[in-house]
Image (cartoon, rainbow, N blue to C red; front, side):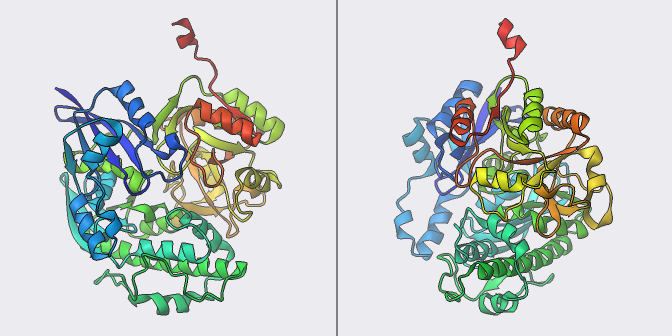
Length: 514
């Protein structure tokens, strides 16, 4: 008997919905989508009615649902922390019924189990360590797991209030950014700061116990759940913020390396899976390759990705990973020639075609694209997106040419493919591609092949044939503070509002015949 199973996350932040079909022992992921793309509210905490309607129309009525946390366990932490206003929230099962009219039997798994399962069961690894680092689940803030024989065993765990993710978010707030949203800006700002200036002061003021391989606990001197704005309030200039960011990123990378080494010692696995919101720190992720031969980061490792993880933790089986294009579909043929024509004439354009990416990175289906060679392109795109001038952009490049333009990790040519923009590497000729190189000479690369992404691969091949350049600047089709464009009407609204052409799919001849 075929069953439809929903996985979902939400009621806190980053709500998402995943749809699976189960047939005997076979489990298949059909779709996964971010709620914010439907509501237009960044990091929306609630599943959106249009989202559930779309799932019902395309895949039918679900038989059951899986939720990414254990509500009563979470309430126990909220009670301990004095967050009494949160205790009256309804159960996820009740919330879903009251807000969508859908009444389903629910299973619940812990927050970190959802994270670890989302990584392990979407990977190709059967023996792997799983490192989960985030702000907070019910109580857990850091965990290490051993995955073998379809089983995940927790081998280390650390609880609230000691949290690397909360500390990183608190420091994000300290430099005038929005916590739980702008951590990636802190990561980017670190490249223009002096990491030495505040390094010792931050370690002395915040850390009570530094982790070791034998004792991976990361203990803090105070609970930072409400931020640290009182820390050095007189230091508030632009250079202060950049130097704080540089020290924070340096310290995080040092913490991360110890935890990766501890995961190796605790599991003795040849592979590692990185999950939790901190796995979006692409500057640090490459450290894992110093200790493990294989590294997998599910393209949506934060809480939104746990809509997938909740189902996989319940079913305890691997799935064939279908790639990151799992969201709303804008039907039709990918507009390759229109994009090329716009790029040659204007250097900058945008594209909205095919299924939306599930995850925070645009991978060519909901992207602003530009010629990476222009001296003024970076500033022009930052102006379009209303972003800070120091912010870098990512290149997407034909996989077969990546080694010619970027130095891969630890000097191993071809050792790393990066289809989901999860690592930074050194650009070999930054003077030729100024729009995609950060201040430290690195780039966050997306490699593209014909197997995983044939439409975008075809675009890059056509661009290379026309210009001799195998890469394009690729950034998300949105502006700062807004979710990515989701459907065709969103794309047309964005084009009219911001004055950049969005290339939509060309007519599908098959659908016209129908």
